[in-house]
Structure formats: C-alpha cells, structure tokens
Image: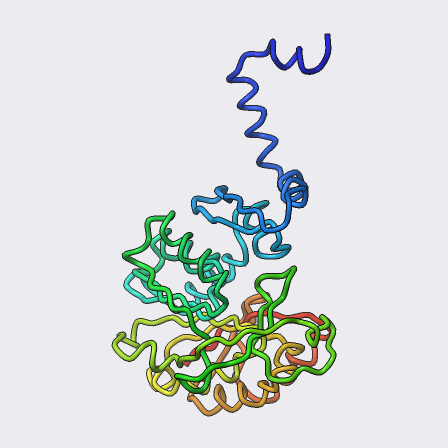
Length: 296
C-alpha cells in the first residue's frame, strides 16, 4: 500500500487535524512561503488577527505568516509602561501593513488608531487588513510620510526583499544594503501636529518606526511634546546615520521636557540625557537596533 492510499483510508477528520497541526509549525510555514511565486498574496491567521501578506516580503510578511505576529509584544510592553488605558488613541507612524496597530486595537488595549503609511503597496495591504479585521470604524489610515513639514513631496527608496525597509531618501551614497541602487518614488508628507490637530493629546500614544527618519518626524510634533504624550520609536543608529537624523532626534527629545526612557529590549527606566542616548547608540553596532519609549 502506497502512502497516498494509506492517507485516503484514514478518517477525514484525522487527516484535517494532522494538517492543522503541521500547518502550525513556523519552520514549515516559512518553507511553504518561500516556495510560492514572487508577489503571491497569502492569508496569515494564527494569532487572532488576519493579515494578507506578500510572499516576497522576507521580514514582516514572513513573520506574520509563520508566527502570526511581528514585534507587537514590544508595543504591549510600551503601552503598559506608559500607563495607556483603553480610551487612548494609538498613532502608528510607519504602519506598514498593520502588524502593530491592528492587534492593539482588536485586543482592546486602545480605543482606536491612526495609521500612517506612505508606500502605496503597503498602504493597500494595510487598508485591506483593517477591513478584514472589521476595524474600519476604529482605525483611520493615511497614505503619507510623517516629517518636519506638511504638503511636501519626499523621495522614497523602495526595498525589494524587505517591504518594511522602504525609506525616505536623504542621501544616495553606497550603503550596507546597496541603498544607492534602489528605485525611488515620490510620496506626500504630513506632520504629527497636522494629523492630530483634532485629537485629545492627553490620551494619545505615539509609535514611530520610519527607518531612521525619526528625527525629522519629531520635528513636526511640537504639540505632542507640549502634551507630554508617550512616544515609542525605533532607535537604529545605521538608519539615523544615513538619514542624518540622530542630532535632530536628540534635540527634539532633550528639548521636550521628557525625563526618562526605556529600552524596550530591556525595559528598565533610564534618565533621558545626551550621555545615556549616546551610550546606547554606541552599543548598537553594525545593523543592530532597538526600540525606546520616552516618557515625561
């Protein structure tokens, strides 16, 4: 008896149960995703949220499909440390396809979210994922880049294999990821102050992941800083170095009246000083990064 005949002779409920068990193995799901043709759309549905992902995305899409989540645990930690309550608005700057804002809203950690994503393909996936999770009345999406000024057109370089590494281009010198070879598109800009002009800033949590452009994004957040809203952001020295944004980030944070921060990889409160930020930067060599939460 061949294996196909053996399977045919098994009860169907046993076969389906076995298939479901195998399909939960992350390594097998990753292997299946790699086997698909480029730009194939598949559904990730393993952790309570649904995500349409692109098979060509070897980072965020791969993690969502194989494990059902991507980096959202850090957001959960940050919300808890910030004392955010379910009546907060979560502002997701660089929302990609929704791996952070969708879980925090769907699980009731916040009341609603504002999601900002400038890259057109990612924005389409983000919009689709909001709809299939039945969150159209709780998440508003904006197709723009957040920077220091609104109503500008910025040059964005497109990453082919890591669809979370599209970046606003500030310079095109050769880089570790061959950034100088990437094709570019134009995207519109806005600011945090413009986006949040009619939002209660006393109940806002800001999450920023814009691949080194964070310093520019913070320049347009004067009202956010006045309200001392909690801000979590990616701290990636390589990306900030290419964008020339590290000094801007330091100036914005140190001049804002915030007093402490947490490295979300090791969440212990630290004083927000230039010396401590510089020391953290020095520990993150090569392409390494972390996420920090800044509090008043």
